[in-house]
Image (cartoon, rainbow, N blue to C red):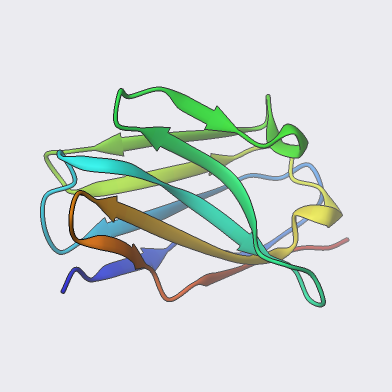
Length: 116
């Protein structure tokens, strides 16, 4: 069972930045994909960004140009750098890791609150 531990959430003013981290309990090198979803109150969970097995970065339109996803295979960790945060970015953010023949694993979620 793969464990994903998230950190880095918090409260920030509009225009501010946060960096989320997601540490995996085993190697992420052979993942099919890995990334981040978010869920705002009363809304469905939505994909924010992911890295494909080919290493390409993909972003949802609302975060393009503001968020950057990355990973460090030596640390088995993925990151989500969030800049120019907006009120509508407020949500619980979940990381996931999809492994070949093993399924999808999720982090516990970390709260990001953007408020003035």
